[in-house]
Amino acid sequence: MKVKKVQFNNTVLRDGHQSMAATRMTTPQMLPAAPLLDELAFAGLETWGGATIDSCLRYLNENPFERLRTLKRAAPHTPQLMLLRGQNIVQYASFPDDVVETFVKCTCENGMDILRIFDALNDVRNLQTAIKATKKYGKHARGELCYTISPVHTVENFVKLGVELEKMGCDSIGIKDMSGIIQPQIAYRLVKELKSQIKIPITLHTHDTAGLGAASYLAAIEAGVDCVEVSIVPFANGTSQPDTQRMLALLEGHPRCPSFDSAKLARLREHFEAVYQQLEKFTSPANERVDSDILIYQVPGGMLSNFRTQLNEQGMAGKFDEVVKEIPVVREALGWVPLVTPTSQIVGTQAMMNVKFGRWKMICQPAQDIALGKYGRTPGPINPQVLAQVEKQTGKKSVTERPADLLAPGMEGYRKQCADKGLPTDDETVVLFAMFPQQVEALHQGARPSPPASAAPPAAAAAKPVVAPAGSPTGSGQRMFVTINGKRHEVSVETLEG
Ligand code: CO
Image (cartoon, helix red, strand yellow):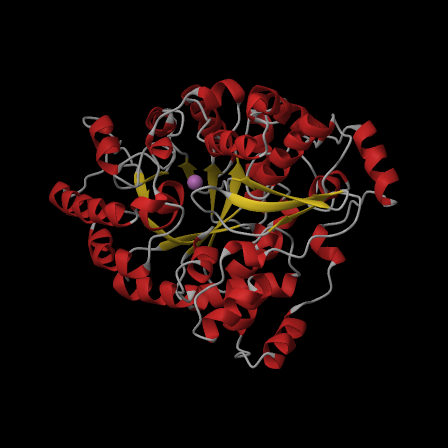
């Protein structure tokens, strides 16, 4: 029997630079590599979505849809992939269904082929609109399982989730290990079990943060995974995906080893070495290093390095261990949410607040919202005492509806706002405006995008803490503003996603 070769997707144009250089690679820096990537045997190229849209608008003065069209022209033969945060699109909170559908329509019409769709809570109801829309516009919907470790995240439960995603019409399943914590034995079991229960192809996506990436890929390949995702050095390994050459060397002689033109791979590396130099300001030795600490704490690496900086800024340098140990306490109370954008920011902030003010003395608003079900169904139950306290504090009861069912259609309202500001009112501009109003305005005025701090909402004078994500992934992490008893604190936490 002929053994099926494993496929490689390449992530250098999205996750590679999001993980290694704060998402700062520009379209001109990508373009010389695009035809080369296209000529190689990659099954897919991840080029868009995640934090790249925010970064285009906020830092690079680029129209993200223009980037998509340009890359599609430059690499027309290989399917392109993007990462979509389900109902949050590429932002941090739910959008109405019509906004999600219009975004997916624009994305598909501009040439995107495969949409990787995930939800931070793995609540499949937050994926349904994006999956349906992707199918409606004739493209490939890849439903993602956000991998995390907790008492409720068993192989059995992940398999159930995979079965559900197949039933919902997904064309393939991605196991999305954003923190790089999936261990080879688990990867093997999970792929094997999924393979026995579902017919659609399975991709494993991990990060080499803890040094497990390549070994877990090998185990998954042994178990029959269809595809794994790799990058190109120096935008590979460490907090990024394992390098293509490295995976090829690891698989040499293996019956499933794919074949790649090594001269072309060497040219790609040469190109990206130069780009890495140009982006030096946004790179960091901490991203390049393999750090198995994350396995001890079971906390994503980006969060750990960020906490160190954060706690120093807050005069809490001595509290590192205490805060890190508080993370599982917060996760458990909030139903064992996976740590991925935006829950990673919320759990991190709440852990700091628990240490600073006393456990659950202050609960930030997004944590209250998770407890109240506003982000969707949590994987495990919310701690009853914490829920009672939140209900008392807010005067609200928890909800069980799909979050977007509570939202009225939004497109026409956003379109009117665009018209009032003298902006174009086409769908592309309006969906971007819905997510990044100030940046879209700045882009159309030809102005430089505003720096992250100015995008912050005004400090609320309320006594209850308010946390607002107000920035974008940067070298030093996501900026958030917490207002407690009228005093505004700026905190920063890392954006973490597949
Ligand atoms: Co990733």
